[in-house]
Length: 401
Image (cartoon, rainbow, N blue to C red):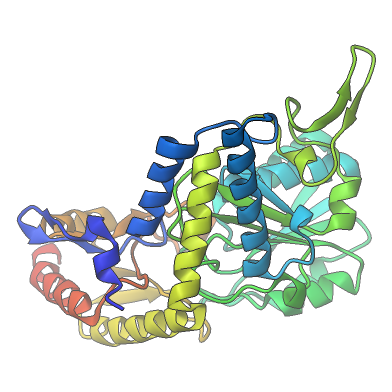
């Protein structure tokens, strides 16, 4: 299968150069099947769901719920009603931070996060702690980018209410040992939330095997449209948590005196959802299943190993995130050159990378740097693109030092 031919956006030039897209950790490009799913919804099926007796409403509702089941199978959740659709990882984490903490966090209680979290897995917990009188504690990590699980054990105490940690660092690429973290947490009866934004498109995710209590991810990082995401939560916890937002769909009965709430998952899905984007998520899952997640992982590992080897030939290069278990993310600097300068020159050669702090300012503070250049790979990238990337760096490196 010629995978690249399935992505129309890749067949273009930038500044007269063939586009090389190495910014996949920020968002992946979309195969034609996902674009077709969006187009088909709006041209043949557009209707609000769950609320109409007519054909379009019933058909749209059926397709929407088929996507929920596809997600359940994709992450091996126990029940489809444990799958809640959101706008993305950020909203999924905010939902849990608001609802879980409203139910379980009291004055003086603590939430544990890691030092390598995206801001979206830091700030919502800070907001909850500020609102309810809680405190945030942080798991440190080594120079190589490995979490200190001994430190985690020491952070846990009688006031710990939840541990929130990413599966994969969007800056360092580290694959964190989630099953081990969950085992430690559950030995103290502490639930675990996993930010899966950077793992969902790179490896098989089995939430029952991992044992986590919440797992959050975005569609747009797994070949689906922007504007759709998932919050998986264990049934028993979701039943305990109050609604995140009020409005249509999340209710059973409304009077001015009292409102009763809908059953799972609808209790957490207030208002009209982005139905077309959800159907696009189904098409993206179908695409990934067609490719095979193990095949995707093997291809990306080959690219990452090859790129890392070639990058070592660049004079003055410094890597950030060299854990033995990592995904297809490479963060680096060339000497003391500002990452933005490197990214700007690469852009003029048709190569898209991400520069800056990647919404992980605590990581940059840890290394005392302003940011990094980040190259991240997906299933449609090639060795030939990496060769052109290396040639470009070899060309621009002497200009910057």
